[in-house]
Image 1 (cartoon, chains in turn purple, cyan):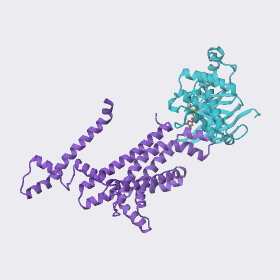
Image 2 (cartoon, rainbow over the protein chains, first blue to last red):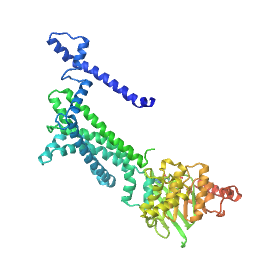
Image 3 (cartoon, helix red, strand yellow):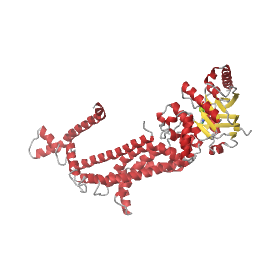
Image 4 (cartoon, helix red, strand yellow):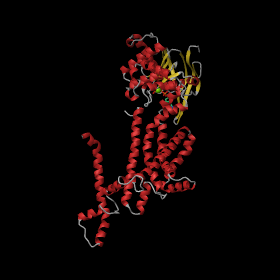
Length: 291
Length: 260
Ligand SMILES: Nc1ncnc2c1ncn2[C@@H]1O[C@H](COP(=O)(O)OP(=O)(O)OP(=O)(O)O)[C@@H](O)[C@H]1O
Ligand SMILES: [Mg+2]
């Protein structure tokens, strides 16, 4: 019991604090509208009525947690998952392009890191571009990528995945370059005394040494990939995906819908990142890194 | 240079160009090591012991002089896998078990799996780690890790074993024990061994030849032949002969210092 408390207690306390703050903030933010409406109707609101009013508007500035929860329940459990109204359906769309883009990004990142570590020229010539690429706001180039790809006949999942890849390859490059360079001088000298080939040095030393670095990068890459997928859904006038739900919600002032989509995105991120965390624990344990 | 010469160095110099100017790590080093000799290198910090071992193993190229190993240049000898090199720290790969660490050079050298298995087993029992093959490095003490790294250097039949302060970080008792084991191993295999140490008793106890070095520039000041019998129980260290030799080495070290 004490152990459970020790593990989950702090999380619980923080969650309660955030919840409380959220409800209070909702009163503050939604009160004006409620008071206006009451005034126009020639009524005056008591404190209790005011609170009730601010927590139950249809298009509040800030919806409260139970409103968002009800909306999520309605759009997940109560809708068929094939329905355009189902958040599960939209999450699935976003997750597919997140995962595809993540795969592209990891492939690209690992490939580039190997080139950078083995070829000085690549290190000197490509690395500045890689860093520059991340200085450009993704919101600025996402529409261009979508338009260009559409014009050459690529549409659907792939353009979004490419935006995800654009964001997710970077942490992989940085982590893998560090990881591939992590073997110390003694280990490299040892390989030399055994007259090991380049490929032996790579497969038996550099690559396994980089695994812990890779996993740290993968977590960041996955989160970045999700952001990329959502951003990729914004400019397309996409009809599906959490990004599309956000956009539609903001067109029509459906704040509850926006917040539901946001919460779903957060849940999706947590699930995906934790999956990698699980894989990380299993792999590192089997490799003997974890004591 | 006779057929029996394992290592022959003539006029070896090595200067490192650093930002603070040149560092003369080795200057005009001449040394012959016969096959089957156990040579200890001793001298103050920075006198070039590690550098000389690295030159022998082709990890460093001398700026002047000639060195031959088994009648070949060091690079060829390295290509022929003549060296088992034990570094100051064990340098085991943390993602490999002890047995798999020992198999690593064997994999690289293309031994078939059965032979890898046999040799790893034999090497492990040589350093008395028979039951630890399946453990990961972090599950072993520092001394055990160092023994594993010695086993790894022994697993393929390198004729030259180069050891750079392999027991430097260990306590006296473990060190005594490993010294005994190493001596027994050397007597059994008659490998040529180059051994760097800071400990006078260790040098005297182990070697057939003690090379005393001094720094700035790094050079050999004295080569002392060890007159102790091959059979050396630990308590030989209390004999007058041992004391006399130790004294000579100490004098040699002191002399080198005054020169420098
Ligand atoms: N890679 C290098 N670059 C520059 N200088 C070096 C390098 N390696 C060694 N040196 C210098 O060469 C000299 C000899 O170094 P070396 O490591 O051979 O000494 P050592 O006798 O092994 O000392 P210790 O007993 O402390 O291990 C030192 O002055 C050292 O600073
Ligand atoms: Mg040294």
